[in-house]
Amino acid sequence: MKTETILNALEAKHPGENEFLQAVKEVLLSIEDVYNEHPEFEKAAIVERLVEPDRIFSFKVPWVDDSGKVQVNLGYRVQFNNAIGPYKGGIRFHASVNLSTLKFLGFEQTFKNALTTLPMGGGKGGSDFSIRGKSNAEVMRFCQAFILELWRHIGPDTDVPAGDIGVGTREIGYMYGMYKKLARENTGTFTGKGLEYGGSLVRPEATGFGGIYFVVNMLKEKGLDLKGKTIAVSGFGNVAWGAALKATQLGGKVVTISGPDGYVYDPDGISGEKIDYMLELRATGEDVVEPYAKKYGVEFFPGKRPWQQKVDVALPCAIQNELDENDAKTLVANGVTCVAEISNMGCTAEAVDYFVEKGVLFAPGKAVNAGGVATSGLEMSQNAMHLQWTEAEVDEKLHHIMNSIHEQCVIYGKQKNGYINYVKGANVAGFMKVARAMMAQGIV
Ligand code: 2IT
Image 1 (cartoon, protein in one colour):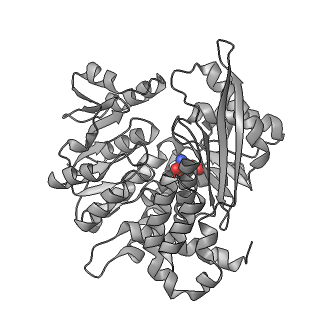
Image 2 (tube, rainbow, N blue to C red; image 1 turned 60 degrees about the vertical axis):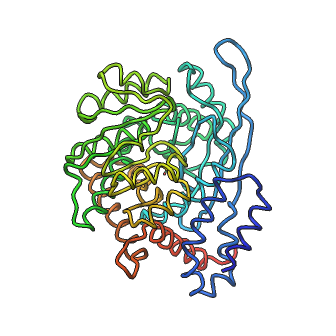
Image 3 (cartoon, rainbow, N blue to C red; image 1 turned 90 degrees about the horizontal axis):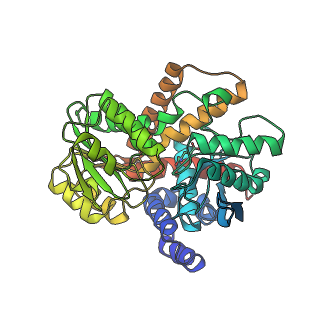
């Protein structure tokens, strides 16, 4: 594969899309060897076709705020690849959202979804709208305006959105309500729905729970256990909450959470009602964690990231590139055992290279956080069958899927010296499935 040529061409075509180019580069470097073993892939231009989304919808979202002022946001849906199933992936509402973000997320989602064992293609959408400081009525009007445009492009067998940063059960409810009205069907064309109208048990917890199941597997491979381990978590939203809950249940001690304002360090561990309090904090819509420090009398580090603390396990749970090379060096110097991205592309490329070079147990988001979308897939199954599985049934399926993803990473990522390169493992396993599906379906 002419990796360099392909990357240069992509950069020339899409200048400035840094996150997208970063995500593509990581995958191409990982798959180089297997790609070269399959000349038929090159002949079918699999990589050239894989790095461009099938299509992108880009639209304006006008809405009226509480003061009567007209606001205009940007809305997008990137339908990246549907070789193995309908487009599937979340919607992100965050001030930082642009096409580069959503293309990187859609690209990652394609491989992640392939790893879940379920038939789902990759997609992603969102807006530069931020829920921060917005009233409930404003959030509803925005969601409705967003769907007024998006509804015609999605459907239960074409494209099934879900939540992501800034989009939780409330936003899904407002979007689904408007979708249903316009599309005149009720087949579950969204996941992360409320339990009363087709949502799945365990979906809110699934990304964090799945991430911890994956980490347990990583540690087990080394003969280690989560019990007694000190854990740094970043973020304080749905993903961080689920991870803290499961890690604590399994005997780990979570000592940090963070927000855009800084991080809190709680040496006694964030457990019990403190984990419930994370949900309260999130519900304020203020996007800050400092109130936690005040409430529980612990230290708050303004403007800092939790990676400066000495921990055994580090779990980025907030946003892309939230852990850089300097953070990686600090963690390694402090003797970190395992780093697992529960956020999408939580670490910079330099940080990832550093962990791998130092032989630290490291796994990428597309493997670690796949439990979220996998459980979305289970929600789709339940909707299609018009029934609801019990909590135990969904959790067991999620557990099984996470074990399977871990196994795929080991098969494709185990190096001669025994080190498991999870980045390579996840990328190759995901790529091979998508590539085979594309080969089977011809040039479309
Ligand atoms: O990044 C992700 O995998 C998600 N935001 C969840 C996507 C989904 O369709 O559940």
